[in-house]
Length: 369
Image (cartoon, rainbow, N blue to C red; front, top):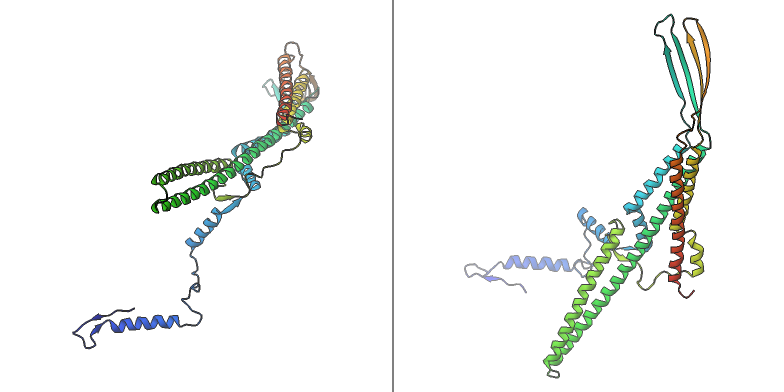
């Protein structure tokens, strides 16, 4: 309804009557357009601006679904320990490359008598030759170190994967608890309202309403605890993902659908390929290779020399051929060899305990087998 203001000083007696009439006619004309331009649901959507599009993209990212496989992939990409172990494995390639290198030759020059008439100059090339299989033993030790670094990387990835799986299902469990707590609050609120109506009707005592409110307050406390547990679980999961999974608000999966536990026979067949067992065995192999390397160092190397000597006094060139061999009288590398042998024994003990520990864990997992 449109209202005007009566003005006795004017001839028509109403102030603003013409303006109100014009506005009303314009509105009626718009409503009479074909298709109902102002009908419900017929308003054309506005084109979003850049800020609106960015906010919509952020909202879509925040509601993305994080699957378990995606979580494991993000953890492998963002975990700093995995990155450090990867760099360590890449660095061992340099040890292998250095182990295959041969010793460099040596160029020597000597001058006898500084006077030009009686001066004697000597040019000599010294070529050291490694004996006793030093180069092969050094290369083998470097290759075993590279295999061990790869095994450590595999073990670390398996550990990270297990931690992500545990944190993922913890987050799913926390979400289920939160959902149940919300349902419990809804039921408690409905019960409190029902009891309140019955008290208002005089059918039950007001004490019943007080009891219902106390019960509802207890359920709300459980809801707050469930919400806190969910936040903590999501925070732990996000930390394992390298803070790359914070944009994901929904987890794809159910808390009661757990991975099936393999049988004892399957686990026993996989014990020998367990990362910890493989790493312990490779440590034994590496220590054995280092022991062979120290044993090869007990064999002295030979240096072959070839050169020419020029005497200005006789105006003649003299060919030089030499051979030098160190005498292992005092240093026979006995200390390094003893250390290598003891460290090899230590690696064998660690390998034995690792196998024993894995078999013990299998018996705990399958006590009836």
